[in-house]
Length: 211
Image 1 (cartoon, rainbow, N blue to C red):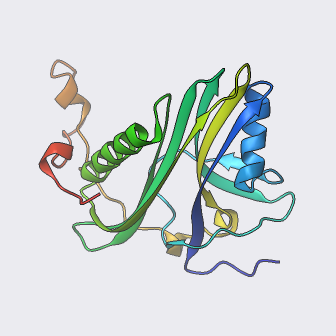
Image 2: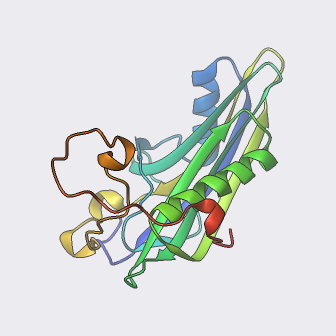
């Protein structure tokens, strides 16, 4: 049994492939079993930000019936086709000196090398949009070739097993403002309802995050 919430939130990256499904749902379920999520109840999480206090750990077995949050990328293939899925996390620092972690995921009908490159590009853009400096990061990408006449799936997941009991007010970060464009930046004819938000920081081609 897990203990009370701590100041750290563990999580880990995993990938899996299943090339011989009778249909997409069958291939997907096989992939979940390979990921170690076959006996868990899943909450698929959207968005880039990870819980404050995220800490990468080695994969662990989950009890049957566990309620688990995960960031999940799913790549589908059929009849000899290929698909890839990838996921990444980075531990970062804001200009104010706060530390946080974010994630990015992707699925494609391309090979793993091309998918890895696209994931890194998208991740750099996410970092730039938030004006974050990378401290450390990890990335995982996998590729599947489906069997003839069968469905295949490539899965990549960032599994967060303890978030349901983790979040409390003292475990949240500060509110950050002024990082994105306002509607007026996009549509100058739009009637102004409030002060415009300053434009965000430099984009991918102007910043090197060494990813």
